[in-house]
Image 1: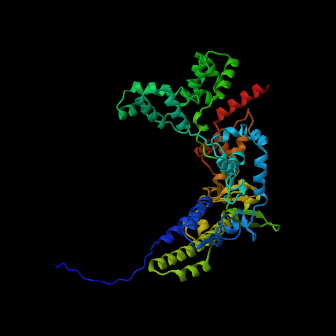
Image 2: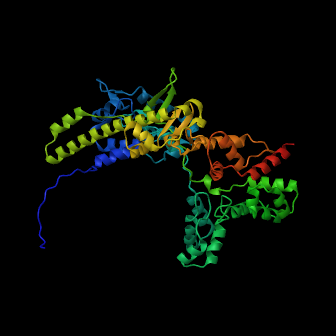
Length: 526
């Protein structure tokens, strides 16, 4: 059989993922903050895009007009004078005659500001152009008018810069030792301290990696553990508390025994702790109170990001007829337009092929972006409307009526793909009379019913378990088996291990721990 090359024609279909299509898909899963950042970058890059009326930032018409009509500087009059609102006269009189008041405001003599050997003309120039920034932070224009608003720093620029934990520790290390080798090794140790303030690496492995002895690294880590905040650089919670107790001079043998048995303290096994520590009830109570005053995460006060409020993407309101009104939050929707007038102007002025290709590309990108933003908004509204329709009982009666829901159910109802629904519900929030929820919250697993009826949502079952435990008495604490029986009486078919998993996810202890804690709390109340 001979091997030869030949040409064949075949017809087929395939989906080509263009860059525009890929970015359109990406826009769906962006939060409104990320979307705003993306749109700002496009506005900066594309001269044909402009913000719609009512949106922040100058539009392209303002960019064309320049700054003339927006400037607050002096304007020339017909007689050649300067209309500066009387500021020129103020500069000529008040600064010349108000020496005593200026010296009092500045806290120094003008002789200290102006050297004796400075020429008189230069003194007058410095009076008008240098003294005003000292007094009010303003600037004087070349025309002689003063503006106290143009050069004032913004509010964010006046805030103190918060130092991160790494910087604080490095500064203390540079003060604690002058040996370059120790500083280098100390920085390696500091780099291994996580945001909570704990040393998260293995000293032996680090010593082998750096080619130094383990004892030297231990000595350096002990030095770092003396830095502020107290408890920094510990390898576990017990060591962190030990460092803080030693700083307070409260690390006696009884306290050492208590710190060494923190698992018993977490279980509230006070009887066993009393025997181990060799103290009575009163002393143990005081010791536990001192432990609670310590900080188990000493590094969390540094480098923490500012708390940002969540802006909902969808607003749900109750209508008078009992239905729900669903609207998109206009604050989360970037509003951009394509300036066709400007496009026509620059198209006529374009001469070379490169310029024409650039303008055509900008127009195509601008049209694509506006269509993609509009399509994104419609898709979010469509998905949110279906979620509200599926979870109508939740919005009307509460979390106990939350239905099990998956992506496929919503996707089939609105004729979309599951991946599209997943992207739309990522990083999106809706606000309703029930509160603020992430869209992903409404997609929960289902738990079968004992009577072959409608399945129950896992989130609703977790809520019922928490309600049962919150309402239990100290002498009648519910075990996991008892909770299973109660839930099955309510028509929920659930296994004991599932109840235990939900209880642990809610941060609720076992029945023995809860009984011990409730009894001790009642005894303290008496």
